[in-house]
Image 1 (cartoon, one colour):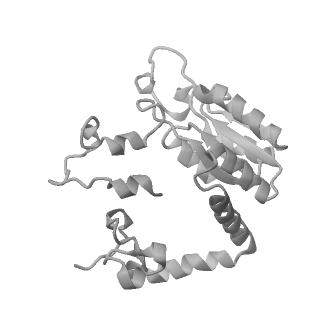
Image 2 (cartoon, rainbow, N blue to C red):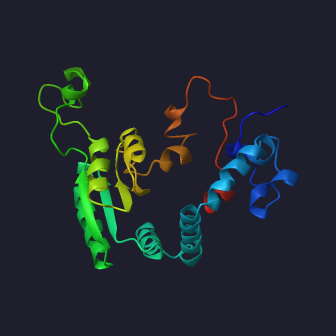
Length: 232
């Protein structure tokens, strides 16, 4: 079989050849090293940029220093310090405003200046972007639109060098990524059904959340092996 796209999701746990730098030798046919080696080389050239390399080095050092010891919050603080950043932005869902307050306090306790913007700021009605009353979560009254483009713009104008996403909805986070000038990292994502733990749907895809499968579900669905659950 000839593969045209990389398919790392289907690499057997016993292979994972890239961990040992052996993708070309041991990687399956859909391994990126075999499917698009030119693309890998092209992307790798970006690390010649001193700023890109500096960020990549900082991320790798933080990974090693805090491996299985630091929480995500601690890793973010350490990463920002390693890069010498001074101002951090928080783009939060308004439902996460309480958590944003705690996060802001933690960041400030580490010496960072912090700006935070909730998704509903501005109070623009959903009708202003062409939505109808039927498109609202609760039809029949005013419902403010989520405003990720403005969240990014306000944090850009505030001079934030690193922005933390806290609970933005699917798609709203995409718009934030597109418009943020500062680096972006994610602390939490929105999943109202699973207490904001979207991986639960994958872990239970064969049982409680089998509804996630589409009409073309394979006869034998791929599952997450035990080794894959233990290792990153």
